[in-house]
Image 1 (cartoon, rainbow, N blue to C red):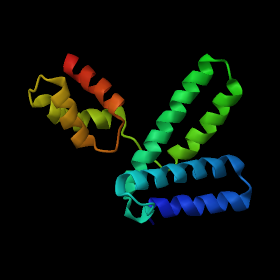
Image 2 (image 1 turned 30 degrees about the vertical axis):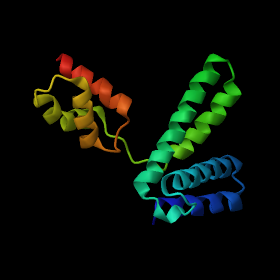
Image 3 (image 1 turned 90 degrees about the horizontal axis):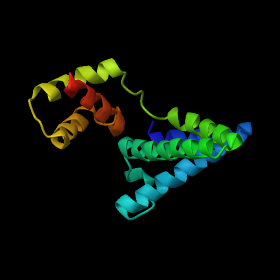
Image 4 (image 1 turned 180 degrees about the vertical axis):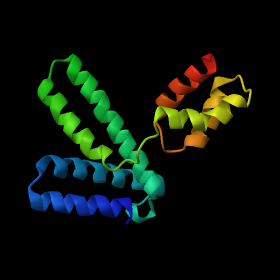
Amino acid sequence: MALVTELQSDMTAALKAGDQTRLMSLRMLLAAVKNAAIAKYGSDSETKLTDSDVIEVIKKQAKTHRESIDAFSKGGRQDLVDKEKKELTILEEYLPKELTDDELKNLLQPVVASGETNFGLLMKQAMEVVKDQVEGGRVAGVLKQMLKQ
């Protein structure tokens, strides 16, 4: 089942179950997916979007929620922190499982062993290796750690 179809069916299930938090999160996510389809293909046809396109949208939404959690924490708004955490948990259900640090290091070992010294080029190679499995910031951190050794 395509990811967009899964999101739509889960939204319908949340509507029937009366789960307002899940319903609103999925509505916002589907709106972002539709906007991405319009931006990428010039139409509102979500059928052209691949699962990897949808995953990118989910990652962007998750990043926004993480930033909001940080901002609300600093502002002392625990009620909003809790709301954002619930929404983030819902989004993370649709993201692929991220690699562990050990798995990431194993994948990055050949990149580090290539002998390249330019960090930008190393990051480019590393991101090609890990693709959508890990966020770029985490890859950069592990790569820097491996280069120091």
